[in-house]
Length: 351
Picture: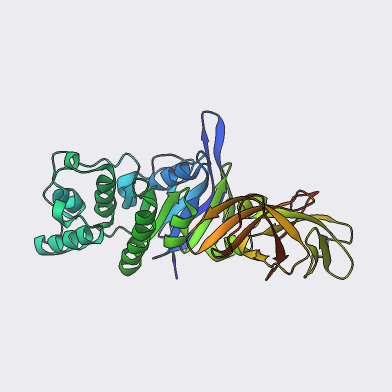
């Protein structure tokens, strides 16, 4: 499948400072991607470079195989035919919700426009507000109008900057699933920016984790969680802690929770100091285990408790246990490590 959107070594400098550094990725038609990272990491700047509001200092942006941005030449945002939803929303205050959504489809037939508007209003549960004006809506409702207005003309590329930020947590994930369904059906290539990993998991085929202006890993949600490329990705995606240990002979690792056998890389010779990524579901509550941990905190999640534990050697762990395994802060219980695969980092070099 041909590339619809490609970034090749894109860097962006602002005020003499490098904000985005050497970012590359490719999306085919209909791919949905997410740029995920903490505030100030450069993800919105990448979106602005794709849209045409920020020129790259190096590299190039290509849409449908054609370069639209290089340090020497910039196609205008209008020439790129990109749909955009940025945080300022920019709804037309003198137009109704229906007119706002229909704005980008003025060259299409009236019947087709009406059907598309009705479909999208139903998607975001705004049918009763079709004849309302933006000032009569809540912030979350205005955000949904801006979202479907950008989707309405079926642009070849759609850029979304925190499009669900005004929604509550449950509504954000639900909207992400519903928007993904429309994007896939219409074959729209989309790039979403967010700091919410669960939103990213719900909508994206590929996720780029951004930190310090650099693309730390470009992968599926599954691979980010199970095979993070570095410590930052391991810490940022999901919940987990690093368990210290050292390597022994014959692919064995020694930790406070006992020895673990697994395939080690050739550069991890016996005696290498390592950190082992341990997720909450890797720690099992087992009263028969000789490894005892003290409960420091607990977070009730309905079906489960998330326990924060301290081992005798002061190692802290997270344990996800069924909620009927009910232990108070200060209590001890047995824990056992169950790992399906190893994610290791060399403590000396951080790799």
